[in-house]
Length: 112
Image (tube, rainbow, N blue to C red):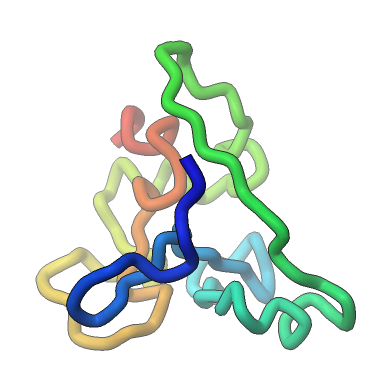
C-alpha cells in the first residue's frame, strides 16, 4: 500500500512515520524530530525522501539497534524518556521529552 504524505481528515496527519536524528548518538537528549519535507536542511543539499518501506513480520527483530544506541536498554528498563524523565504527561513538542526507548524498536520494548 502506498501511504500519502498527508492522510485525509481533520488536521491532515502525516502518513509517514516520525523521523528523528541525534546530534550525538551517545547522548539520547540530543534527539530531535526531522521534517521529511526539509531533509536538505538537516542532511545536506540533494537529500530527499523518495520512499520508505514498512513490513509486518512474525520473525524476531534483529536490527542491532541496542548495540548502536548503548543507552537504550537502560532507558527501557527504567521507563525513561530520552530527556531522562519519567513520562507523566506530554508538556511540549520536543523529541527528547516525547520519545522513549520503546519508540524506536520493539527490541527495546521487550527489554524493559
